[in-house]
Length: 443
Image (cartoon, rainbow, N blue to C red; front, side, top):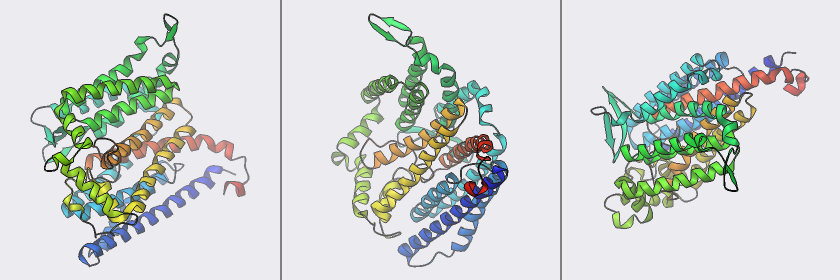
């Protein structure tokens, strides 16, 4: 009996059931938030749920035809995170919520387009230098006069007519493809100690050029754009992928040393970094300026307690940039520690599923790229949540699928499509071995 015939409907049925559950949970939260805020059931609850389910059903049907053996968990979890984020954005600003809905539709369209165009992820390896040039070009695009825009002290956005976007969101995926391709090719050389200095064997410095290059690019981003979050994300992505590719702890130690050195230089020469660190260490003297946002975020976290004030019952609107930088504090205030933890568990499920897909992938390039994509989700979440909870200085970066922001949402749906494409390819390879089992075992 053909295992593919048995497995595909099962995966997709599970996915459809989870999507329906995500829509119901999002609709319930949307209703409760409206009741808590105005005492009324939202008048647009029917169209809202219909459009949401229509978008997710379209993505689900596309997977049935374009990637029928893909993982069944990723899309529903991403949809739930997207839905929770939308509810709290609508809670803060209806106009932003309308734009987020449009970007969600654009994200689903980008998701489907990626599945249509990228039939085999390994084909991306052939265009690695094109992706590298495009990724680096996008990274520095905000520096171009007349189109680059400074927001809160950092040059993050580009304006093109009526549309503004954050180029680093696309750049992180393009650079992940480039990093994976280069590391697969150079892994053995990077793993081997070929140069002797006195009694010690070390890796030839020529092979360390990529590490130093990533460090240099990160420093350039910090200095030129004051973009601490993007610089950390790119550097952490590179070092994490390098460690996985070589399985050598010394690269983590070497990378940590470069990070500390780069952070020290940034703290000494970049005024924006100094302000961020001062506000992190002691925000109270800067309450009227840079410390206000952090302090209000902490009050929101404290007010939420274990169970939260209830959807629509908090005061997240007093936090500057609540829909972007402090969406986690907004969720924690109204849903409490339980709700905030549930959101983090959702991200953890996505990261863990991505790493599981990486383990099951057959080709080294697919393994490493999938690991890098999972790292992007994990590092972004760590940076934004760590900044809100004062574990690290706050930097301008988005909470994947949750924060307000069209560039981030579209890029994350493309990332999701690549993960599912690798999953589909890997499960297709494993089908012949599974087909030897009885149908009752396969379920």
